[in-house]
Length: 198
Length: 198
DNA sequence: GACACTATGATTAGAAA
DNA sequence: ATTTCTAATCATAGTGT
Image 1 (cartoon, chains in turn blue, green, purple, red):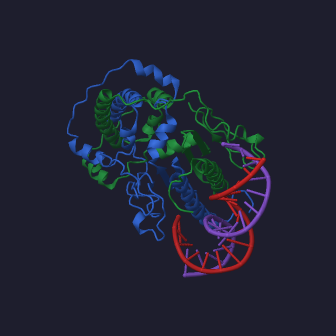
Image 2: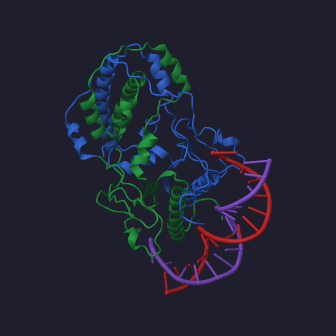
Image 3: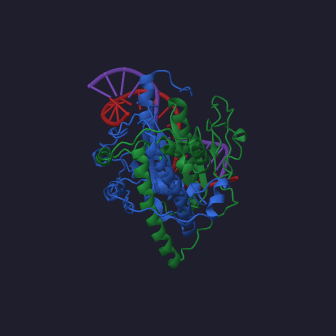
């Protein structure tokens, strides 16, 4: 088969789907057989997200990004100073609840090393300040809502529920970022439960 | 072949190496044939890093990490519950620039709406608390730092230079995070330069 | 670790649902 | 976008250098 981008749009679609399956399968096999840790993120031509990770996508990414979530040196300048900006709760309790259910980037936290955690913490404080600032300013101006498609769940159609997949793949942690789910308890591949997104 | 972790250490080593090659090849094929964007990170049993990305590992990761419009449906309730802010032009250019230039996980920030920003802010606070808690806990446990091997270039041996590989793989952007390089100008696969890692 | 070799079991392209 | 089916192709485990 010629190694160049396929012209036929339909065939491309099919090929992508199959290829992705094969790719993910290979990835999981590598994890199972060799105990390797893998993070695999795929964006379809249609911009849909597919991911696979062992033990978990974010954990691997963090490890890849290590040492420390502050990849660029310029950021390091901020590590020294700055204390935590006091932010009072306001009436955001309910918001917290909602957010708690969907915080994607917090899940890998308990697997970070102490050093990473410390850096992470500092970085968070810095970021929070910036965000707070942005929020305040945004309050004054009404940023037009970009097309929200809030109820769109790209990729959700692929594996709506891992347990419903016809041929149970040994894949686990097969997710898309908008609708994460861990296909634990899979035949032949059950890994320790991942911490819930608190 | 039985799908469980291999016992023979030697065979495992070989299998990993082969499997990784195959996996990366598949990944690149998916990119070439279907124009998919892929990030693939693999940690060998020996903790060595191997990565592949199209157009680039970090770009894909960022896209993966970038929270599109907060996608959870339950979130909607809160978004609706919030009043809309008033219009007012304010210059955030410098702030945006600063953020864009420094915090990788903040990059998507300027694309968030006010409502999203507020949630983001709350989320940060929540997260920060968790981090602080974990840090404190970690302080007491003194979690041993995993060997950092900061100046080690694992994986560099695999594909020292793509151009030197006997059978030129169609792989590109085969990197390890400590020694990044883009194998642009590859026969049959040259992609436009990706944004530098600011 | 990478590479050569080879039988065979696994994977895929293509068409179609 | 995924799946089924099939024939043909390909990738790989095991062994050895």
